[in-house]
Length: 306
Length: 132
Picture (cartoon, rainbow over the protein chains, first blue to last red):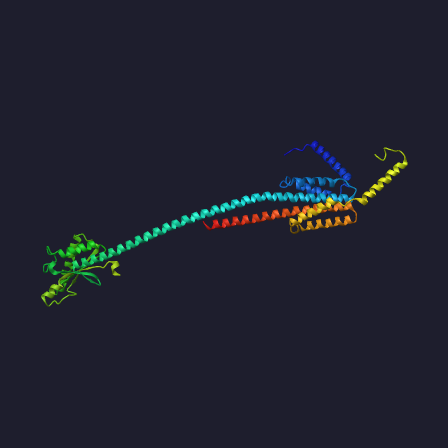
């Protein structure tokens, strides 16, 4: 947004015109006497001297080049002498440039050496760090391995313990089964409660005859994952319907007793089988007594089924 | 000055001119070879050769030798001024050969260092890249 001053413009134009004219005049005057090639040598030297990276380097060669160019620039009617001077000036400028560039390269080399040392140091540091890390890692891994070993020992112990336990448990179960006088069958443990529990023709349990049932309660409490199926049986005396009903009531009596002793009702089911499935002949009194019975079928636990 | 000061006649002047002419001729005939220039050129060439300029600045070294040969021919032709100029040219040319050789060598060393630094850095980055 500068406003153009018309007077200033005029002044500048005059100045430019004067300068151009004087330069042209000077050129006309100087042109014929300046030796061929001196201009080029001067340009090369100026270029070298204006390079900030090189200007201050190789001062001796630079000075020689400068004076050689000055000599070469002097007007010289002897063409051969002039050419000789220009030749010397040209080569001396080249020498100065080469020496300056060599000096620059040497300085850069110092920086490169420093860079290399830094890189090497970094590499060593990194290597050391990496080694450290690897060592830490392997310690870590060793720890982890120890831990794993300990843990697997632990697991082995646990397994042994479990095995011992299960052996113990199996032994205990066997003992209990023996106490119950149950027999293992495909359906599970079958415990037969004889007719000693009941009065003839009655479904109520005899008082003081619950010893065997209490063993069953203990067993079911010990093995809470087991369920029990209670089945009532009769002999063939009497009508079939009556016997069916009696067998059902007796089974229910047993179930009620067990529930009363704290066994969950969901674990128990009762049914009457009547005169069916006799275990002995109904022709003899001894056989009929055997047939009057309540069987408790204790289910095998899921794991034991396998 | 000398010619003018003692006498004012025409004949002494002529004598002076004749003497001067003789002197000039004599100078031409008896000018010794530019020994120091030639020696300087030979030394400069030898120095360049020792610096392996034949490998790194062969053009300049060849030019220096050619100029020296020209100087020698000029000497044998009794053209001593020309010989001196050739010798001087030979010398700067040989000096240029030496300077260029030093420059090329210095750059080669730097290039090599730059390359190997680059390789070192690359390796470091690869190594550090391996380990997350």
